Amino acid sequence: MPAAIEPMRAVTGELPTDDENWAYEIKWDGMRAIAFCTEGQLRLQSANGLDATVRFPELAGLAQSLSGHRVVLDGEVVTLDADGRPDFGLLQPRIHVASAAVAAERAATQPVAYVLFDLLWLDGLDVTSVPYEDRIRLLGELVEPGPAWRVTESHLGGGADLLAAMEAQGMEGLIAKGRTSRYEPGRRSRAWRKLKVRRRQEFVVGGWLAGEGSRAATLGALLVGYHDATGALRYAGRVGTGFSEPELRVLAELLASVARETDPFDPPPPRRVELHARWVEPQIVVEVAFAEWTADGVLRHPSYRGRRGDKDPARVVREPSP
Image (cartoon, rainbow, N blue to C red; front, side, top):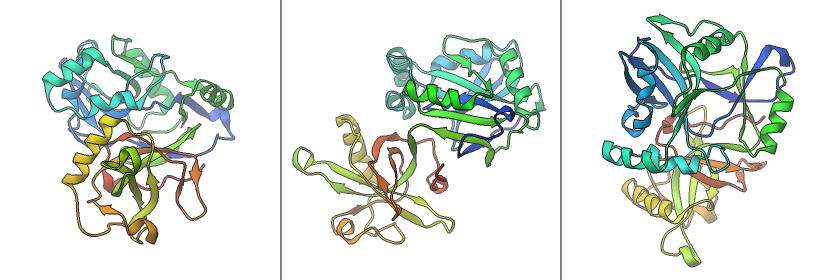
């Protein structure tokens, strides 16, 4: 069993035209996690390779439920709102915890669920080259639903109807997966496609603007960007809505800790933004929902969703438009 596995990633795309060759899963709005289960012990790895085990004590029983099998699993840690929909905002207090005691307290008041959607290793065998439809079948046979974990539903064909149902239920969208596709660790592959009802992605914070009015003493907007093919940080716009008061306080401390004198964007933002900006090292990753990209490459109607400490800022790029 490997010590670490970098997860496979999907591209943003459109509904496949050869619908019968694809399977569809709910796109879960949470934190990606690889689970290493051996001898009844669970170790969780975040998407950026960090050990996340201590954050989610309620998942420890997963390894013990596998009847001695040694496996590596892929899935998403989520929290559900009162209507049973995943809510990344509710997950925020759980994904930035380093203390076992604090994690246990938060698990009691805001529990998570681990939604599993792939099987990578089984009893010493690498199964990443096994076709998706066989991996998901094996996963369903291996993992019984537990108090804090379950296997996602996989639907063969019917993508258009499923996507319409996701929109009606206020969900984020679907992941389409080629039925015969292999698991490609560390790759962003067209064998997995994100079919989004609402557009959202991660961005890197490069600066911020002070607030006005009731927020004059705190953060007004984050200045966000993404890395292009050369590695330059490209400006993507200002994000000034979606913040809770507690999150504004946390962000103010984080921004102060990574302050710098120079603009990290290349090319720089518009002059009217640059004149009032305060710059930071491009180390903080946030998730942003938005309506669309404008013709000049800026986000339209962006809204803050939360911090993504599980993402590597160097790998944040502009996702292709569907």
